[in-house]
Image 1 (cartoon, helix red, strand yellow):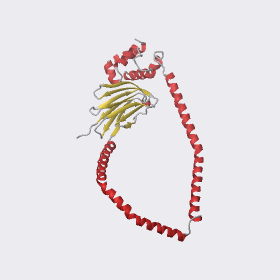
Image 2 (spheres, helix red, strand yellow):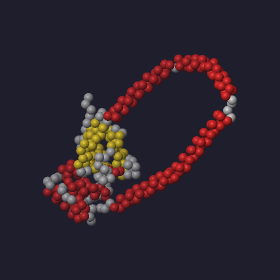
Image 3 (cartoon, rainbow, N blue to C red):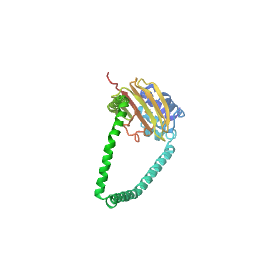
Image 4 (tube, rainbow, N blue to C red):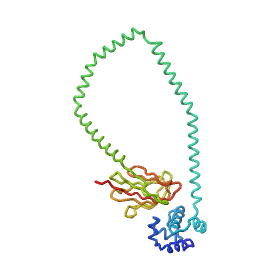
Length: 306
């Protein structure tokens, strides 16, 4: 057992807490808590999560995390090397976006000038055709009159053929109209349901947030790593049963049908690289994910009364 593990264990025992009590308080698995006390960090997925779990452990037993990190810095793994490439990649991507934006701004005046020239040329051509090279007014009117007479003569035939076609296809059109009406009603029903759905944060404390889902008769939940990101997540149902625990990388996602459950409870390692969806709608973090990196989330399902 390491010196850090001894210090944490003594503080836990002074509080009269068992590992099970600490697991319930921190939402960290008991085996990870035991690994921290024993100084065995191999079972924990990554240096970042080692530091995050130690911080939560220390806070739960009343110790100052900053003092713990400073006093036992030789035992706690550092994550500076892991964070540096990520920060560099973000800086480079911002530079690329800025360069592209400046190029578009440089080209925009040229594009607008070209559009103006083309529009002006079309306008001049139109004026020339109608006023400079057109037929005399008398001929123009006579031609127009003849054209109208021919059209009026052929109109009944076209109309009768269209009416016969409409008569033969009237039943099909009526049937399709009914089907379209039924589909429209179904779509409006689904839209009405999505408009009444609400996911609101009702309580925040430390790094924990409680949401309430109302106005829907289903609870389809999806958790996903953002593109190019990586996050460790723990997913449990309202009864505390583990549905998933592990790493999600580069857009990977896990989906759960929790319609028959009362809630979903989450431990998210990197909130800024994690996305949550309820019934296809994205749920925003109540706590800023860039500031509160490790978060505990609970979404309670308030079912509609029948």
